[in-house]
Amino acid sequence: MTLKRIALALALLCGVLSSSAKAQPPARDASAAGAASKDPSADARRRPQDAPFAFRGIALGITLDEFRAGSSVRATPLGSVPVCETDVQAGALGMRLKSHESLTVACRWAHRADNGWAVSQAVVDGAPALEHVLRFARVDGQSALHLYEISFVIDEITAEDLRDALADRYGPPRLATQNVSATGAMPTYVWENAVSSITLCFLPGTRNGTLTYLLKGSDSWVKSVVRQWQASGAEAG
Image 1: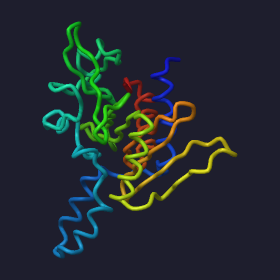
Image 2 (image 1 turned 90 degrees about the vertical axis):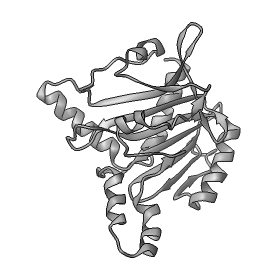
Image 3 (image 1 turned 180 degrees about the vertical axis):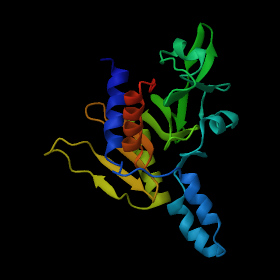
Image 4 (image 1 turned 120 degrees about the vertical axis):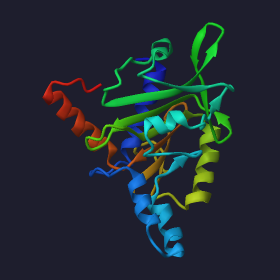
């Protein structure tokens, strides 16, 4: 197993800590319900809990088409664009190639280099990330693919700065595992609202960090829908 795959596997492990048992609808439905209120002050209090977390303006719950249509490229170098597993360029980046009917699709930012396509570096807290991926899935049988996870591998200094920045913005984390020398657990910090979570996890050895934005319940409903597609004989993707 390569170092890249090990880092991404640990990122997924940290993300599981913040997932809940029940599926949640796309957060845009919750925010729409909040907007229906006639009390502006109530809306202001409700919105931070009802709306999904967003990474630099890219909100969990948006569709793949909305992600592609937007100009929200958060990567370096300039000229980077989203490349997904449904694109022919994905093969040059070492990504799987999938059909447009696939159940799940992963995307990364990429750019044209001298020797062809290359993976770009997402910019997190002003610093280039070591790895990144944005994952989309079909929710509750809907035809559109929705963004349910954004994850990064970042260096230790960036992770420490980001921990303080997240605490300043969202308050103390719901879960903070710090004293881990006796148990061997990874230092982990989790912020959450009604529909989503942010998990920052410090990896052993390198002390690099993983940062994961996740819709609540996504792990459960993605696995459930995959099983349904497999049982029907369709390609889960």
